[in-house]
Length: 254
Image (cartoon, rainbow, N blue to C red; front, top):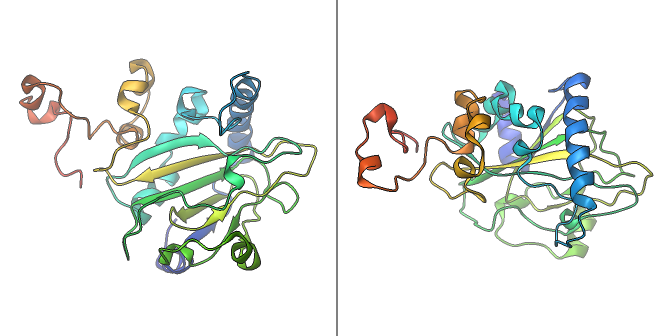
């Protein structure tokens, strides 16, 4: 899926769009699960700064869990970032009707700037078409190459929009300056967002402990790697000295 030309464009612009990665059937199943979770959290009386943005989506539906084993996603992540990459965060970037959310601020998804070295990769899976009216993401091509974050005025003067179809895949360097738009329509605009990081980095949540064993057991090798099962810390000398095939922190993880 990621050829040399696409990788070069990604390196230069900081974002690429791969069309028609998921079928309408796959998208519909994911949207049903995500919208149910979004509505459940959105009506929660507790007010969070990112209200309506579902966290840890792998816990909220079997199709969102199975996405972690998807070979197309795995290929994109391991090609653009690292063969041993893991998930930093897995959440929603849904815009409810006539609304905006925490993602509409001008921001980057990674605070670290290391020249010529990407620590985090962002993935957006639109479950509805992204249009100018329903909040298609603003982004500033090439901004991942600079340590400086532009002012809002400068950003919006130069930004482009990630207009795309449901089932497409948006991949971006997490240092790319971007912002969700506002949804001015009468319908929700659903999307999933996954942030991937290097295997030696900490995750937002301790996914191997957070996830029930029965869910982890449904994942294949790809999914288990991505949630961090290969880079767990031993909590005792007994765990540290386990046989190699049982080690919590596997060899050659980067």
